Image 1 (tube, rainbow over the protein chains, first blue to last red):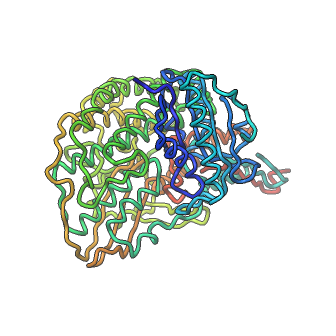
Image 2: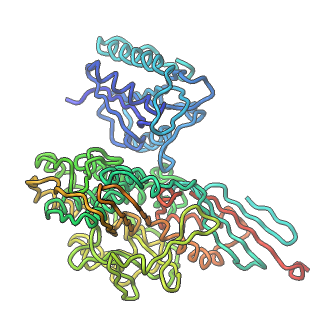
Length: 164
Length: 442
């Protein structure tokens, strides 16, 4: 049976761009119930029918105006994604991929976007050490939400923007 | 963006979208006549050829794959073929078939992305694939499913969808299990029919009436539609053995581009590579379903309209599905996934057909397996001079008072080539500069 939640970490092996993958891996290690965990390189890879899921959770690196390590949480749809800087090949960014998926009616009823403000994404570099704490926090928050959902309790109301 | 003085007019389009990489276009007009067209590629040189020198030859397939996230297999195939020539390695028919299958995955993935999200919006005045999806949601969904199939094949065979890691000099690090490939067959059976429907849809697009006397160049193989092997064929009848490539084609630096321009000798003339060239030169060797569909769509003569490149690309998706299905059904894991070799000093070159056109690699290695020289000629640098020549001819037809409209028409023509600027070094901003003699102003 298909898991009701799909978690996707978007990233690459380059510097702070790894954060989406690191969150995905940490979450996979916890084997959350009813949640399939994936890590992908391009937001393009979100472009598939996901209407058989109850929820999509995405985590990616972003660059906003906040300090490195700031955690963001949004509930799709939100215009606030446009205020951040995202990257992707052929102009396909995370907001672009989600918008196209929404246009095609491929998104599940709930889409949550987590993001961490990052610094350098230089190839072959390690992650900025201060981000480790943000990764731990975000994993704990997502795990708590998934557990809460598994117990049939209501998920805490999402903050539509802001620093979570 | 436009500016004008008494004797000068400048039109600038800051960014050409929906291509890979960063570049620009400058058009200079004098007394209303086109004087210069420069496809400016200002992305910094990436210096991969120098990066490879001194590295172990085993590192090459994975390093060159990093040149492009859309067509890494093309770089890997060229590299392993050239290095195997240098080493005197002959791969088995089973490995050859697996490489062909891997390349099919890349053609399906790259072509489906370009057709549906990058190029098709141009034919309907849409700014993006998302806008086009409002008009054609089912067609875009179908296209994205096709792309996904290509990615799945790359994952199974290459270890991952982007920058595969399973390609080795001599073969593959690991041959897939039969059931891994067999699991893809139902998707590919659906995909073959869906690709035919996509090609019919694309063939119905309204296309500008624009033809040119192109010199088409593509790999040609006596028995197969070109992909991994053959000689270089030109539409004037010239056939160039792979090892003679550099006697017939030369790369030159131009001041306005960090990518080299490849020209054909002896006249230093531009030439056209890519799906349109391949179909025109080798269409008779398309796989049966694609050949039949080409006939159905009226592709019976040489097509010299670059905007019809999208139809050629769609036919190649059908071809790739057809070939891939045959290979998937026939697959048995090879006894040896990788042919062993001994280091020896030598030199080898290869030409294969990347999704956007012919690609050339040459390597020289020393007796300890280190790279002494590397040369890589990607398809976009081969098409650059042709794109500039096309624009010189096309611009008088579309040049009007509204620079943004002019720029849009230029972008559409450029996108019909599916340029990968990151590959050729590597996207597009248009600037038009116009001057007039003083007396012409009076």
